[in-house]
Length: 420
Image 1 (cartoon, rainbow, N blue to C red):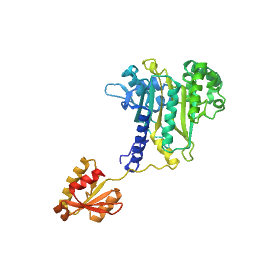
Image 2: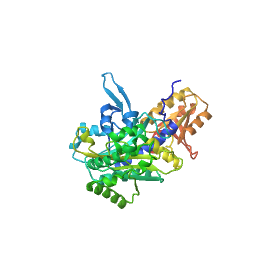
Image 3: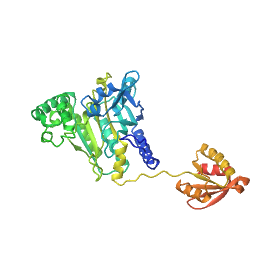
Image 4: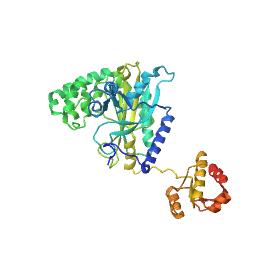
């Protein structure tokens, strides 16, 4: 039997209403912050992710789904959302838009070939936001405020916001030199990936999942000590404004994020709920100065974050927060004979065209079984069509919650339900 591919999942109707609820709220919050939706292709040129995400990252080296198309072009299913959005910003010359920054959000499936874990899949759905075109601590704070707003709007309380500054390019250069000096004498004690990163991106050693408890990681130089005055001032303004807004946070000087394009503010949001799992990160993001130029774009900067819908749902489950199920259908039509079934089909067409949700029995079951089906579908009203109802062209519209019924013509039933 052919089964769902490893690392993917079917979202069945018993669960899909939760996704719809979450997605609707995310769209509403994004619009409240004046972010507009962008939709990019599911696959891009492989070079986009190699250049933007970074050749030293696990995403590029281990996790991308890459293939050659019939034109012998190397394409990759998108593993993350920032690079495609930035590519679109550059290609469509959005730097010339009157309003800057350009505020964009997306909700789309991403693909990474990684080991399946609780709340992590090889195909997962990511909601992300990007503000491109302006460098200002207030934009960074807006991002963090929006991030907290999203999770708190669902009722989540066991949250921990962790922030850091990676500094500008000059600060990072000096810090990387210090890390090379710190790790090089004992780099052979680290995993093979870290031994490679010492030359390509030593900051990512601090982000290694295998060697995170190594004593040299714990005693590594703090990046804050290598920030130049401009970078320190930028970070202090971000923290000050967060304090003004009452947004609680912790500073973690080892937080560098997993992508090469981050500069200045970097952040992660974590869940402190019991039973959430070993991987506590809910969301992450940061500022990316220089990314657009790296992709042959204009001298513009941006900031963004992305969250996994799967892990958001997992956090809600961990805190015992239930998502309300949508109401059932407006009307269920029970039928007593074949002629009634034909009439019911015509009525359904008229009802649905007027915006009324309605259904009927298609298995020719007995009336009692049809009424049970109406209950399962949580119908607000029912009507029964038999010989008498067909001859009169009317039926008793029964309200299921109260049991009250009123005799109405077929057209009156439609008009009544439309008004309700």
